[in-house]
Length: 187
Image 1 (cartoon, rainbow, N blue to C red):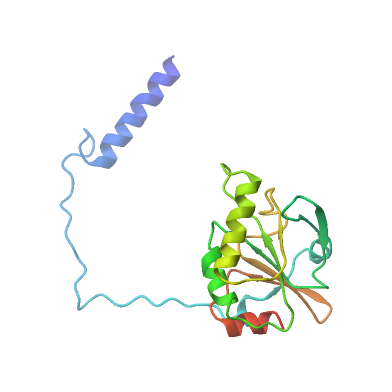
Image 2: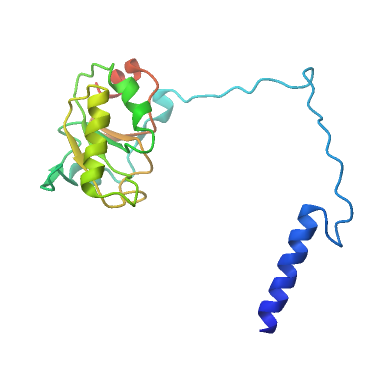
């Protein structure tokens, strides 16, 4: 009881102090805008090129036997040596990814792997959402699913692309911004 009372007092004092209305904080400091048009500078965003982003995969053998399922739940094993693998999430940036991919004409058609679904939806709803997104952008490449959590064990985020080139598995994290970059990545 005494520990919880002490903790409550500390939390209350901290809250009052940080809001500027507590016994320790006194009156809150007057806020003033110190940014003027003469002193502000535009922020530039540096986007890494395809070459700067492409790295050797840390665990290349994982991508030679990727366990996925079809829309109707049948297990399939994919191999990056056969086709490039693009992991994506319909709910997390899928539209941005497919805007550029829908205009690309890659030399090697990729396999799409949908994952990163919202936890409150059913597998049937996840499949329907994925198919709707693919139809919206006229994407006809094969699509498979990973309904479990592949983050950290198989992929670092979405989208994540893995390609086989010169005897190595290469990892391209994130989305590429133009169809020409996708053509280059999937060549």
